[in-house]
Image (cartoon, rainbow, N blue to C red; front, side, top):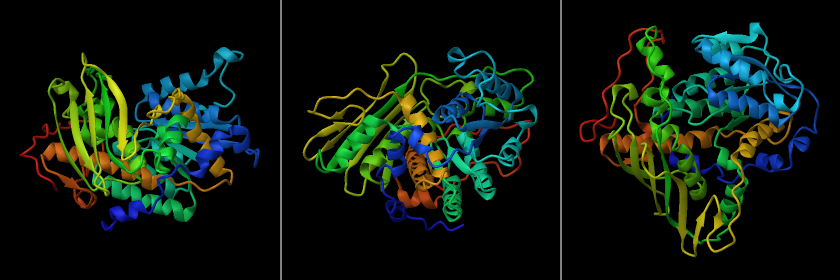
Length: 428
């Protein structure tokens, strides 16, 4: 595979919100006006986000049906299946939701469950497994001619980003639609504010700062019957080869907003981080905090902080400074009356409204490049923190780093890599 996909290639893609988002703002009746055929959806990854995405697909249109689901673990599949069947039950008569049409023979468990879902008679697939699996599953879905909703991030290393990019090009050749899980791209307040920034409301953007500082997330205690590999996958947040670390898995939302504002990815990242509080081996080998300076092509620097430590003041916000003013994407241009931030629930549903509209014959949408762009930006920050070195876009894109196992996955012994140590770990 060629590694000569440069930052310039990324910048060819417009950072403006797609026309599909405009269709979404008009509502599902408009989006589905072109036909009444039902859209069949398959779900791969039955955790909370996957179940939520399938719910959003149902709420996007009464013409969507969930017809196949798959997960590595049967207990996760069973839980998702039960929850999906009860969607909106308080608003209707008891019994399964009429758009939930998964039969026993369309429930798949195991490492190949994703293939069986994709091979079912579906129109699009929702990919919400741990991010390390995303490049392979995306490739299989496009190979089989399926439209895709891919949750963020889309890879955990440069090798995975390159594979995702190549698959995205194939999707374009086949005119298969691809929508990603960057929900803020379809959240009304962010869309309006960033449109104003692009129109010059604060002048040239010179700097910014963003935060994703929260407490601990979940962690599943090890059960006697679990192998090393099962423990790691069930606690995938804490293993870089599965999640990309917190700067990639969670904080990527803030990074994507910055890239959206700056109309492209940064030229370099210089960061630091560590594992200060969450040091127990139960938490794998990821860090619990990062701080990164991203430098963009116009010389602007945006500092990004992320943290997952209990007992600290939380902060999920950002502000950007320009030659004529400043802006908070969640509130508006500073100095103008602040608007109430629209609930993200609407943006989650718009993702599926847009995808369905494109499948119906609306404007083609393929967000794979943008998804890969922000994923690699986050990976750059992690690479810098892990090594203590500044990392350029070209270094990251051309890196040989490939965290995905070379042998087929099978439950059994699975060693945990050592915690990365700046000054000792080297860029590859």
